[in-house]
Amino acid sequence: MLLGRRAFIEGLGATAASGAGASRPWPNGAHGAVSLTYDDGLTSHLDVAAPALEARGWRGNFFLTLENMADRVGDWKKVAASGHELCNHTIHHRCDLRPFNPDRYIHNEIVEAQTVFDAQFGKQPRIFAYPCGATNLGLGNANQELHRYTTLLSHAGFMAARTSDGDPMSPAYAWRKRMALNATAPTYEKDSPVEALDYLELALRRGAWAILVFHTLTPGKLDPGDTSIDTHEAILDAIAQRPFWVAPMGEVLEHVRPRALRI
Image (tube, rainbow, N blue to C red; front, side, top):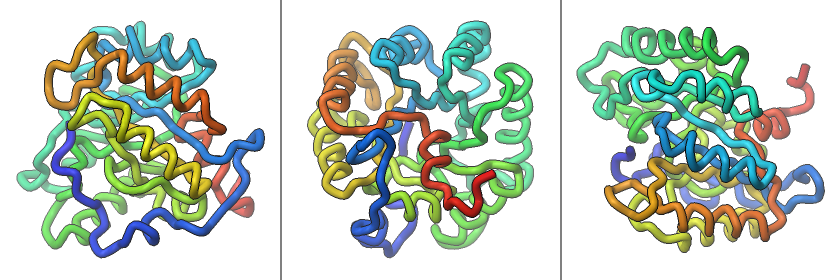
């Protein structure tokens, strides 16, 4: 789920937010990169999304909430073993963080979830996705709240975190802002591939990294945030027809990591 489609860092224009103008070659001569991400650990991700990606030779990111994935742990283990990245989306998917003490929230909702994920799925990239796009952790203005959240995530051992707003990113921008990575949920408000196609074309023009976010995949558009299987397939087909490198977020982050920091 998402809150409003608001920017996560106030005061940044579209050009600055995307790092437009910066460039770096992507693998295999690709003109841009795409990561396909799925939030909440839903049954349709196991039954629809993972097979659709694997049929194209791709792997994605599945951001799991502990309470959603508990009934099909064995299936999620198979998804992890097949090369997808299983990442943290908290235990209970809280959308309003104002009632919570920041330190206790990080421990009770995120660190505790990560302990379970590590035990069940082995080594996975420590990447987080903000539930509902909410970053209002603790007191202060939006920038102070976000800074507090990202700092606590870093201290908890996370290498990156994904928002749900913002333009495709240059490699340099993505590494610099890796605790608040731009992304878009292109079908959240309307079950159509059009917004996704526009976003992908922007990524190609800029030589940038596009992160797409999906939630429930259904035979037909039912509830807010759902994506029909036909629309999902159309978006995947459009990506396959364009010169993108498709990879999960951990792989892309390793590619854009400054060489001096690589082990």
